[in-house]
Amino acid sequence: MALLWKIECYLRRTDMPPSKFGRLAVGDPRLVHDLRNGREPRQSMVERVESFMERHAEPRR
Image (cartoon, rainbow, N blue to C red):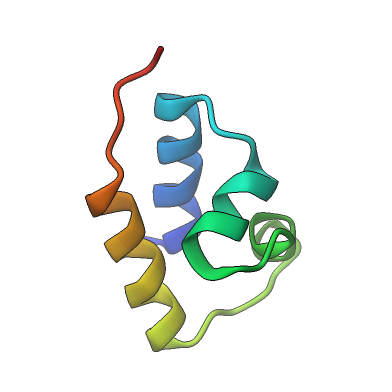
């Protein structure tokens, strides 16, 4: 499953802004913007992002 698709689902589920997600997950507020524009993440970043989403799975408020 593509990383961007997983992130988009997470953002909808948690109502988290993309810049906040990038900042919290990997310290890069432009992460989601860059992924939407074709950035290809390295495997280590994919693992960090997926780990963040697993640890911070919040229900929608």
